[in-house]
Amino acid sequence: MGKIISRAAAIVGAGVLVAPAMVLGTTMPPSAGAATPTHVLTCTEKPTSKPRTYTLSCADYGAGWTGVTWSTWDATSASGHGFLRQNDCTPNCADGKFISYRATIDLSKIIATKKYGELFSQAIFHYSVSGVKKTETFVLND
Image (tube, rainbow, N blue to C red; front, side, top):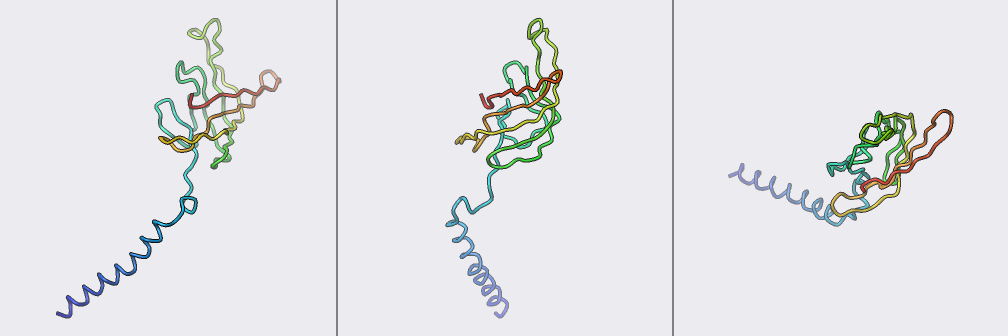
């Protein structure tokens, strides 16, 4: 009988310890929990963080980034460096060549979605062509 009582006492004791934690866990505000990262949405509708490669033009795969190393990625912005890769569409896009430009990339403009959570909706690229500085902005999740 002694073993039954000690097992029962252990079960009751565990319940006493677990119950307050369960109650506290359900009353914790969402902001007090772990932060949900902001993502970018891929062409296959998969939310992802810190992608090294990403397609900007899902319809024709005419632009994207490759080889990106992210120096920052948080809930409001992301910055990195890598390559902007674009089809020059010369003489037309079907026969064009892809050109890569060394670039810095800044992601911003957060949108909240029910299905995917918070997503970056804008990518800004800073790069140079023959010594001329250029800035190009792409809308993400379009």
